[in-house]
Length: 412
Image (cartoon, rainbow, N blue to C red; front, side, top):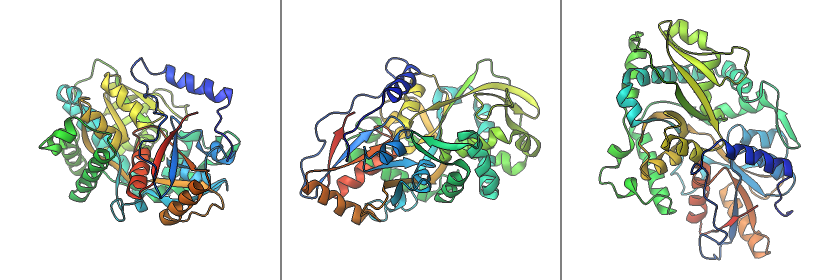
């Protein structure tokens, strides 16, 4: 494997991304020392790439041995023929624990919900309607999502280029889009809490609470939204004076937002709720009018970030009032005192570990054996993850720890 390098253009791009965040809103540097003691089962290095964009190119050029990512970057690695899926997140160890794991949730700042409950409930009704649309119209949804993510052009990651429509079509079946905070969903979310405690990521409010559910959740927006959809009747809230900032990732997981915005006329005509882009010509709108019963209620800024922890840092400073985000970053933010609440799920599943094409890893067991073999040969595997504390980073670390594989932090 070649030494890890980042081209000058990539460093400039990373610097520009970091400029978007105010002081205190960037991730801390990863330690250079191993986070676990050397193990007879081998060692794996984790390279945090501040998002998923560099991953396929790093794999194609041999700078990493694999990456763990959200969709569509998992399928992009396969479609481009540079990689193969070693294991989808549902099959990561411990065996059976992640078989239908939560992936993303919708979070709201508590103060914003207290001041604007009707707005949040109506916005949530739009999310529920969009989720139903995705499940009922997967082909149409794939086209909409590919348009948002790439303008229906190819996904291009350095020297790797693949069809965005094909990658999204292949990605959608690996994700379960749901908003129901069911008992099984709650149980799986509790598993994430235990995983975060196990790897030492959370040590605050969530870990020490005697009533974690009360600390983590407020399902009133979901319950109100479900009632709105069932009744097919939505009440127009009073107009908001301030612009609302909503965070998201450029990921298939957040398709509910993309579908709601790009097919706004359908939702306006069907439910009386819509996020109408101010500029209808943009493939990826950044400003939209929130309409209820044909009346503008608020201006909404749509704010992308490179990973879930960045979204939560923005929420902590009230730069975001609501966000689509992975479960572990949301839990970690609440644990640190960020005044947000998890309102309902957005989706389950949808991540995967991709390794170089032809690598001797077709499941977790063979991946672990490969990791030991490479460690014994003095060439430990290096796997890229999209930011410390992201859902993929947490699941990879927990799987390695569960398998007795030591972890080192790889710096660029």
